[in-house]
Length: 197
Image (cartoon, rainbow, N blue to C red):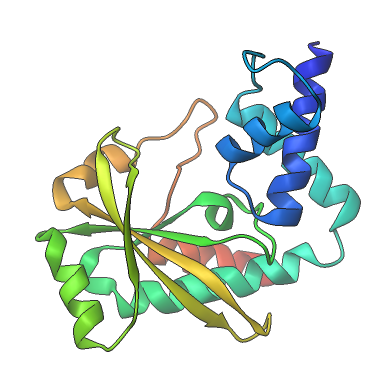
């Protein structure tokens, strides 16, 4: 067992849950916070996710399930609005580790990448445009909005990552544990239904 990696994972997990940081940013801040050298070997994302799950079970077990459900319902609302663009939910909201500090990440698979932008403009939805490296290693445009999450009583960051329709095939691969990194509206509805039982 690598004690330093475990400490880094625990520190990063706290930042992910309490501050809503993404895994990469949390790892690098954890290195600084613990005073480790810049070239310290970082825990992998599976180790961070396990630490996040542990942190939630210890410190947020009474609030996190309701917060997660609220974020998933918000995601589904937007997925229904953007149905024409084959939306898939990813990130912590899909994985089940989201709290009220987490943003919602929807990946849209468009025939024409500009069509999502035009639709947002036509609906009068204000957004900011940025670019990130997508799951395929290529830059993708991101349309970011502040969406009201009524059950939480606050606005949540909602990010629409714009992919080409052809990228959808590679998006549905499973990881080493048989999990998908994202799911469509039908999969999310099933998840919400199963959680309500």
